[in-house]
Image 1 (cartoon, rainbow, N blue to C red):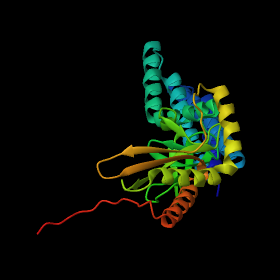
Image 2: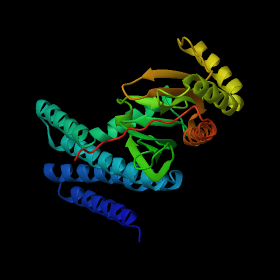
Image 3: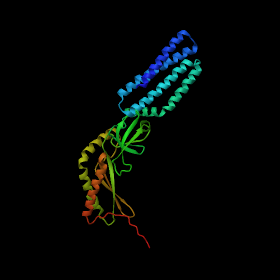
Length: 305
């Protein structure tokens, strides 16, 4: 049963009936009632029947359909109140004051929706991220799987999962929040990031041999990425001011009270960061086990009696 259609028919019949009654007993109040019903009937027919049918046919996403219908209902009530005020309030100053209060009430009620809608247009125009990009917004990290006018949907990574892999949870972020937040885009204009592994070795270890072995591993593991990464980073430097875009892997040393820290720096594809780190770590462990002159350091605790 289509209640919208039934409601429209009842409004039309009521209006027609009152028009006939107005011909018999004309009166000021009755005339205003007829004008009010006529205005509401036309508004109802446009918003509750025509627009809702169009929304149902054109918009397939259930969430978007719900939001459009919510906006449609709010617009119907706002315009209906506008017509009633116009018909019943004769004093111009009072009418303007009523319009101002009505506008303020509508803006207050829908401020979050308007912010999200404007944020959606800003995102579409700015191109800060696209579907498929990996971004971080307000400490939420994930791959963008959908961008609508009101919301951005991420397939979340990290959180309780140790590594850049999906948790399986969808994070839905209002576009109004995104448009004002700091956005970290891991894949905008290039596909690579730098990653590091820190390995402590003892002071008695042959640290020079350790660095040589690790660099050999990194060069081998990074070989299939280097040319593509170099090209993308060069292209990136044409669009942004970037200095010292070195892609060669390196090992840096830090001296501590207990051991020598080897900071291993290399590039990796953003989406395979955890896999790359695991492969490099396993190769390093194999090399350390082969060598008699390299030992991994660990913190020890002595308990006194």
